[in-house]
Length: 73
Image 1 (cartoon, rainbow, N blue to C red):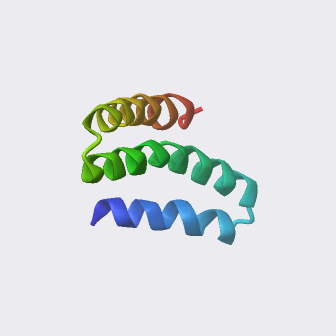
Image 2 (cartoon, helix red, strand yellow):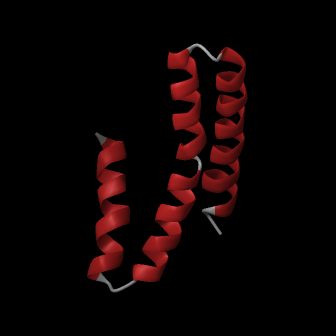
């Protein structure tokens, strides 16, 4: 539940305080890594294990880079 509250705050507060540019950066940084996650899921469900493994590795690397390194700055 805490994850959903934090997400709600990250989306709503910039609109309330008129920081739409800040919210755009937040959404771009958080959504960019999800592409690899979805590719990995689709590959896993379709039986392409090698592509799924590569996509999940790229997901973890992009998640760490974007959310733990770039986002705080």
